[in-house]
Length: 206
Image (cartoon, rainbow, N blue to C red; front, side, top):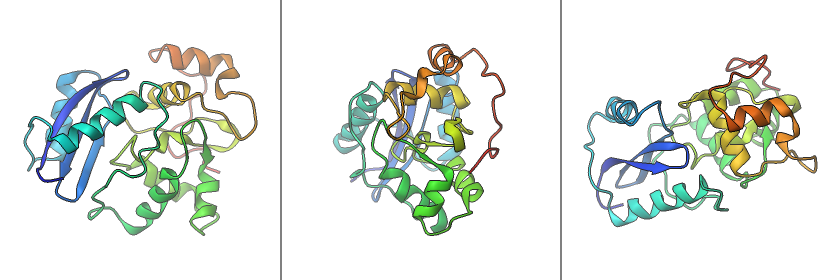
């Protein structure tokens, strides 16, 4: 990308934020509770960047992210990310996560195995909890053992994660749809309804 800055853009989930620089995206932010809160967090995360109209390249990425969150199939895997400030372990985790196609999921333990570190499920969960590129790095497609939602650090928490998976029609392997469970279906439709026994971030990571 030839310019740098950040912009907010509307999606089916609300107003997201995206920041970019010469090497590619430096961050994507899923919606906070209001446009003002999303803008304020973008300003805190990227204090050296200004809110500007998206360049044509940035706008093309925004269009693709919006389409994904509207149910279109696009793995976004070719979008350039600037990971110069991302720890090497996190980069390995994000590479595996980016290879999960829309509508499919892995567990934290399966991601750990794919990076060659079985038993590192908790560290995988922590890396995904610090993912600065959601949904381009689709951390919402990584679940806890037994198809439990696990945690989600973006605005809206687990409710946002479940809504994103529902939009994609997510399934677990060859099993029935993720939302055959009534409580998960209700939570995805109504993000203000708390999940029963909602796991805290970092729990059930197997």
